[in-house]
Amino acid sequence: MPELPKAKRARFVEQYQVSPYDAAVLANDLESARYFESAAKGAKKPKNIANWILNDLQNALGAAGKGIDECPIPPEALDEFVNLIDSGRISGKQGKEVFAEMFATGKSSASIVKEKGVEQLSDVSAIEKLCDEVIAANPKPVTDFRAGNVASLNFLKGQVIKLSKGKANPQIVGEILERKLRE
Image (cartoon, rainbow, N blue to C red; front, side):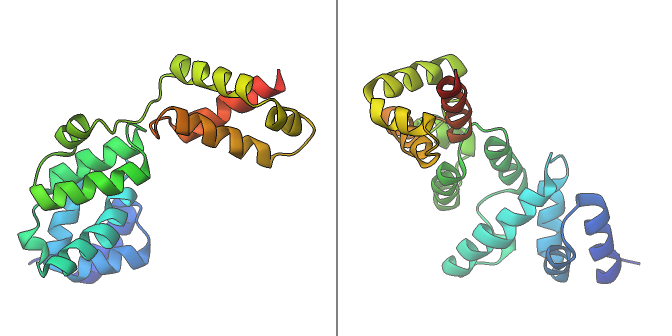
């Protein structure tokens, strides 16, 4: 006897740590449930897989007039893609671009990231050099931050990201800048 939707919803919440609402939506349709389980099978963060399916993938499929069974992104490819974001190799914003390209072409996320050169810069020493340049070039915001104006940090962070042509990992930039400015 096949697994009933109620049991499947409970299992999704338990096994994959998705919300009861997400579990209900995913388990409501047999094809969606199969796709989710295939994608989440080896996922580090199955909740993130569910989010991409329920938001971006469903929207893209709806706009293209396709069902999940006609999805140009295989479940394993979605898992690989979400892992790129979760690991910090690409940002969420870059992820949106990569996802759109994956949906349009069926290419893998790794090949798109390589082709377009959108991999996020997470090399601490490279980011430290950029931070040093920005700190040297912007004495007023540095003084303002040290005087207690926390918003100045966001300005400096933006300058580092701009200098890196949008590739620097914002979280790492913020941590390095804050550390350097408190020295």
